[in-house]
Image 1 (tube, one colour):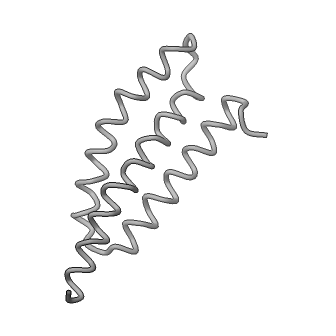
Image 2 (cartoon, rainbow, N blue to C red):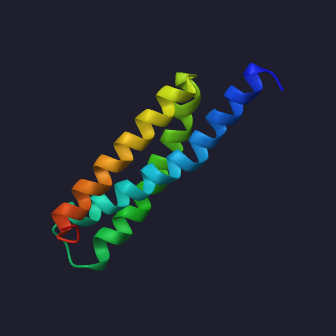
Length: 92
């Protein structure tokens, strides 16, 4: 497998796993930010996460540099999840 094959495998992995991490982090963030009764932020976070996951997968293939894609997805997901947990009071 050539260099382009490994790049494509890395982009597919970033779209699948990094997109999932980002979608989950957005759900956690919305759960901590939205001032609604307990179940509603979880529902809204799940609904929004589908659009975020699709957008992350599309973005992964427009950038075309696996390192930049992985870094962007991991850093964004980490920040969103950390802030969401901190605002929800679940991260000490």
